[in-house]
Image 1: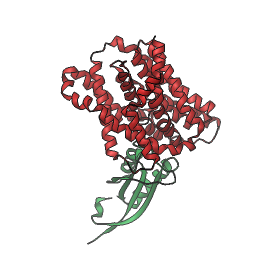
Image 2: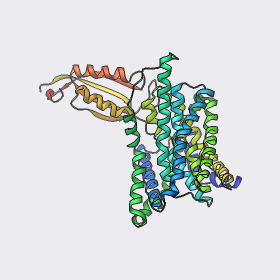
Image 3: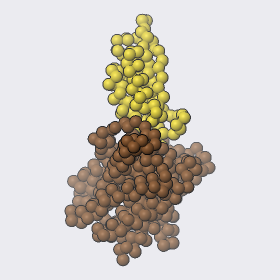
Image 4: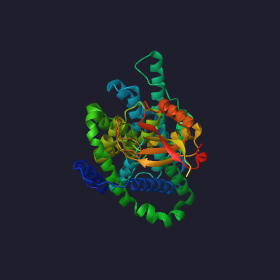
Length: 332
Length: 100
């Protein structure tokens, strides 16, 4: 276990993330241009989709159907469990509970990539179709949590429980359109389709850009993530001890559930580790704007701080090796 | 040169509201608008956008009636839930018919 932790902590990804956090802590003027952040996220998502698509062209429907089913199941279960814990134990408001749950139900693509890199470095690479599972997990979690929020708030308004702001009543169609046409969804799904269509022969000429440069550019992206997480650290005091504990314990619970379901669906140790990490991760790209638009009553400090400043570093530093050990134990 | 007095409505808002605000501006009858990025901090502090988010500054030159209508929509739809600032100023324009 210690060896695995050491491999993880000494990777350029983790260390450049730590450098970003450090830069914020010492109040360095270091910052990456916003356009670079946008360009890097486009590159990473598109590369992920393309590579996944090429791998998908080698996979059979029978091999992917079981893992795909458990992934969608995870997408429906994790926001419910997160909501119940936040509302019942954490005593958060309906909007805050649903807002945070949407983040924990969805998935963080960068954490997913870090898990993929990790499983490869320890010699247990995950199945090639994992990026397909990533796209399946991105949306249901957000939808389920937003639906819980909308229903509970409507019920609370009827029974007169608390002061509920007037409902904006955004149609489901509009929310779905936003989620399905979001940048991350379009690039991932588009990349998958293109990758599957072109196969190995079409992939070869573009491989140097999308695979050769991938790790280096991901390292720069992690520096930016470190800067973003570092600038949220000050908000931890407002978020409180409960949210700090939630941001570390909930991923372990969701990760264990993901690893268990993955092993039932017949995934390898690497596949289980990546699925566990996906299930344990909290979205900070797709979920924040969706929650802000649909549940504006939810406090952004809570969901952004827990997803970005607690759960993301936790998974990156400790979570992934832990999910690997759990997966190894479950698959043995 | 002959100028015409019209209303310049400026809205500074969270960038996630961009599409909705554009729709509101069109629905209210404005003939055009300009959007630029904006940075800053107000009583609601930081934004939720591209990770930590930015603001937009929307400007539109309209007739007093359209400005009134737009301010009405903005105050009922956004003021209590989002970080939004809106203000009106009078500007003198040439080719006044272009805007109304």
